[in-house]
Image 1 (cartoon, rainbow, N blue to C red):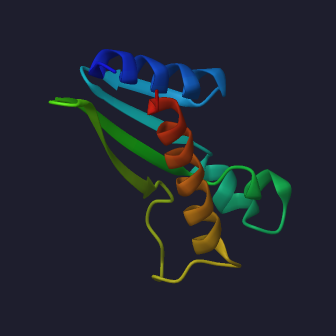
Image 2 (image 1 turned 60 degrees about the horizontal axis):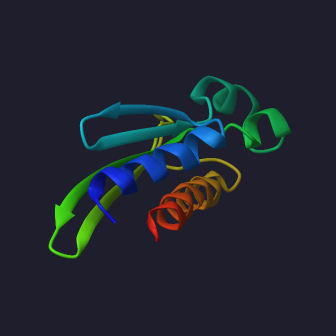
Length: 110
């Protein structure tokens, strides 16, 4: 598959799921959740738990075999008073980042 096809498929997969997607050339940035809602409601209430603020940056580049996708997942939680997160937040950040990567991986396969 060409890099343009891969990029288009990934863009469609995230757009269909109503993620916030921004593009710049061959790069895509996907963001989900709300750090404000997450900080207000935390892990114990669905309004917080369903708004885990994470992002995924993807770069699609050509290779001899077709296309390569590089991914960088990160949390968008922002500053913290301590390095410790609360009530299992680390696990939820990881789960949500893994979910975004799986969507991109599935979309990029022929």
